[in-house]
Image 1 (cartoon, rainbow, N blue to C red):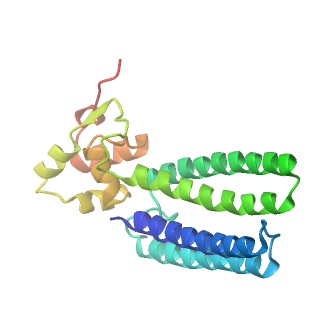
Image 2: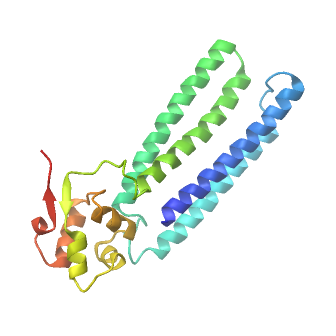
Image 3: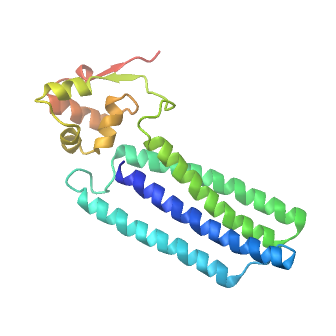
Length: 217
């Protein structure tokens, strides 16, 4: 499992644990009071502190990984496939967040209860983070048969093995991507950028059309 996958799982679970703790306390207090309790400043600050801690630890881990990957990856610390997956996941997170904020506002107007609105916003934060993590993990899942395959074929694996049994890691280092991206390319589940395609062809000393083919309509 790649670093980005592990990182996504760990911090999604941490966010989920924080959310479960938050709503467990709210539920316990609401049951004791016989009604939904108003937001608790101390509980809210505790939850926010947990999320900030998770973000800081995550940033430190990512920074260390990026430094360790400098010999293989560009200065950004992630390759083109990582960026594409992250951008799509962040888009999904935004859509989910917007939908739940709308529902929170609707509940506020219907019930005229600010506590419902406040707690719904916390739920929106948690669920949008889980949506982002879920989309990233699905996209990173290289074995997924549900992934839409691009109409581009390639001979990357054939050419790599013919070049002194070149490893996937060695090829990844040559073209500036991760080994996971090379795997996805060889399995036909990801089409590299034009720059990476030219880099691959140059590594094997052949033309671009000797590596890639088109099966689209």
